[in-house]
Length: 613
Image 1 (cartoon, rainbow, N blue to C red):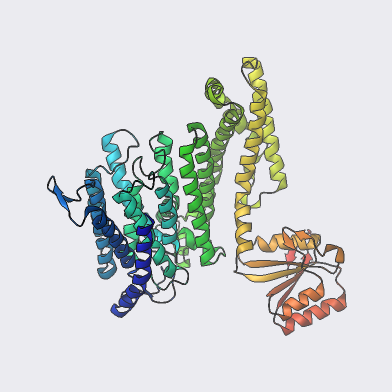
Image 2 (spheres, rainbow, N blue to C red; image 1 turned 180 degrees about the horizontal axis):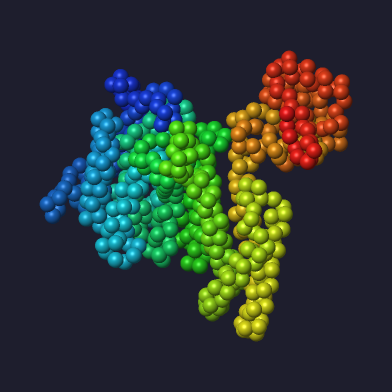
């Protein structure tokens, strides 16, 4: 099998430069535009190299296994020992590749492409490529067409930043390959997937940032359709026929990133009064860059999420239904929180401001702000259910768990009602996630344990606590507290992680590693109107030399700061200490003036509020 991967890989590596040359000569290039990400004309037709390399490798397999002859069965052209369905898959892949190529050359209308995609999906459905999610033939057939067309377009939309679509396709494809049975049992489907991965890997070499060529629709549509179809049914993933959660959840998780990106873009455009079909810099990758990550870092984050989704999707088949449901729920909750965080990032231009003020459109972020309390309550209902479920799952196993699960279902409504009331009573829904701190964590701790104690008291009074386990409620309280605090602190963790890894913003050093330095860092790094890249602190107190404040190091004393300034590694300095010597302050002011470094002083007004000037 490896020979077909490497054949496609080497063919793609050789063909991409040729396609790039021909595309440039013929003027088939993507020009810079306000809704595109690149800043110079870039050749298209990289998908031609992927397609030709893939189909050539598959054709080599057919010729070597059939002796160079084809037979005719039931009026169709098939290989003697092959399966007609597999040949149809290959034919449909060629068809969608041609559709994409025509679009790259002639620029088809979106509606025309959509119709052709439905036709191809219908052909695949006719030859038994279909979902079996509901058991109702009509509904499953409609879901199959929606799945194939949706995933095909999702990969087309995902091709919005250098290396993103190809990298996610490789991660997803190798995950699907793991579920295709023993590698010794080759089939046309397996060889096709292997060849597609080889062709995509060869193209990716030239598509890393800064990309010298784009795959175009010929590549993205081919990849999207192929992975959508190969994820159908029980053969696409290990254990696909074991239970409904695995059948539905596994392919969704493996294809998580294109689904997430398409959903985020579609919803944000609709609620912002924009056409879902128009281009724009509002994809998940663009939002990550907008908050400070480099293009490569943003793509790396989405690659990592794709890999995590694939691992979770494959893992579902190795776990029991109870554990797989818990794992999938927790992972998807994390992804939803991440998506909500990305949705808050402003990516639309200022032309929308008049419409916003006039109330004609409502950006997604504003919509979330107005409804965040309802969303918080809904999230907590889910978290309470997960925590109570996890407590029983962790406490009991096997038949013992089955015996006690009736008790879980009967008492869950009481647990939900009591816990929600206590959380509301202690003021858990008055905080703002972005400013979540220690006192907020204490508030949630009070609410969780108060709810747990009241719930246990009710069960003692009503049920005499017969059949209940005290350890279940202890586990429940701990798990729920971790989930509640983790969900609230997630926005700060994501923001802080991105800021620390960001290369954007003015490089900042704070002079003074005391309380004033901590206050200055808190204010400056939380600003939304200006971006800083925090390098660390300096302080003349030698005892603080190896300390860390808010995770940032104390880099040394004044002379260390002077060295960094002279090397051009600092953009601005904030003096936070009130004890700095006047002579030293004068030296610092002169040094900063000579090197055009912005120097600010931390001050306290009459109400002791921190200000930086």
